[in-house]
Length: 299
Image 1 (tube, rainbow, N blue to C red):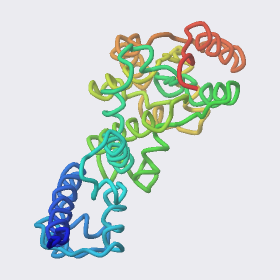
Image 2: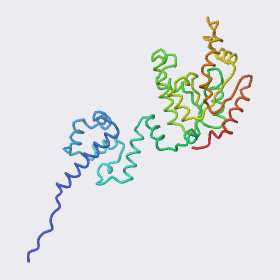
Image 3: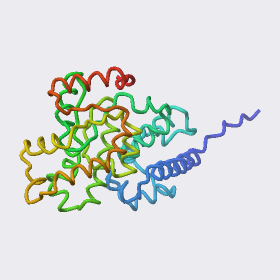
């Protein structure tokens, strides 16, 4: 009796299926990332032509080069080679996409997947609004030190991103450009900090989209004082511009306060620093934070 030999596996077919699967996975993840082949090439060190061949199923890529491609895409090699995508691999892929995304996209993901209760979205983040001279920076810095959470000046974030002082930012980008940088800086701060005290420029409230974003992501406190004290404190900081050659400065300041009052009143709470010492105003702010439960939430 003749015994037929066991059929030999067709390794060529298996290899071709693996290459085809790899082609689909690489193209899929690259498109999810929003990377043109040129960008993936720059990140991985693999030529655009080779990547095109790989995605067409014509590339016979080495393990070393595949590792580069997977690293650039933020996934593990096994996620590109597996016969079926498992939940764990999906999670790894999403985590990789999130880690590589810019901060404003990360924040959108958090908004979509996070709790939808407004207080939960704002928990741990506090923002001080109000005109210059009210005491936002002083009180924000003191309160951050008192309750051991970071204090951030949004203008400092704008300067850091632009790589130049605020005066140069305004001269180079203009008001519209500055407001765009300011909005982007707000996104970064809210994405990077679960617990923070933020102070923003007085004019941010006049930018509806940015202010709406601020109100959604931060517990807000209006730091206010009298027009006379506003002017006095600005001059004490060494800035004489509001008064020099402008006899109507106080009238203009009162008009500005009146114009923005309804915007500042959208804040959840207020602290009036008029005729108050720094320590008394700090106690008022800390009492608002504690009584309103602004720090309840992420630790």
